[in-house]
Image (cartoon, rainbow, N blue to C red; front, side):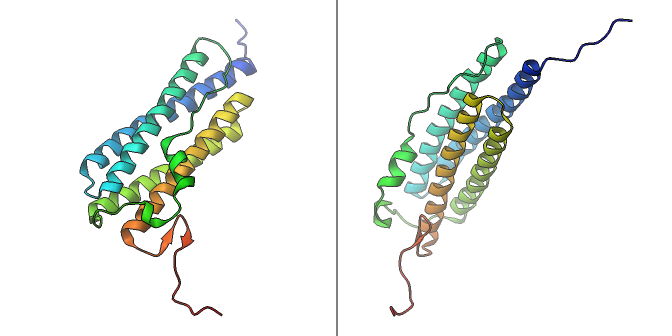
Length: 184
């Protein structure tokens, strides 16, 4: 009887990394399709523009993940992923007031439903990337997952800001715009 050998640690790491990347690729494809659908359906112009920006970012994530998967599949080690700042990351820190989000009418209930679903998708993506980064044994994989986590959190914050803007709740990027309380 032939003795079975256990896969080496590097093979196990490659298999785990490959599986995580395949899940991430499917998630990014699903997000891209969903955001394109939402962009077509959303009536509010700022919401429509936001979904298109999210599509651009998700396509960028997809490209990076597919390149990394190709690298692992050819037996090579993780490479340092090259991320460019997304439009969303460029916009978020520079918006100085809620007036910078130009309103063209209130969103519909369908717009709100799309934004709430998008918010949940970004939360799940962020959680997934954070978890995979913690499990990854390779520093380049950890850095890639950490960067993807940051980007998904930026998406989450933008979507939440859009929701707050449409609902006119008095908050903008988590900061209370005004208060009805008397100054003491």
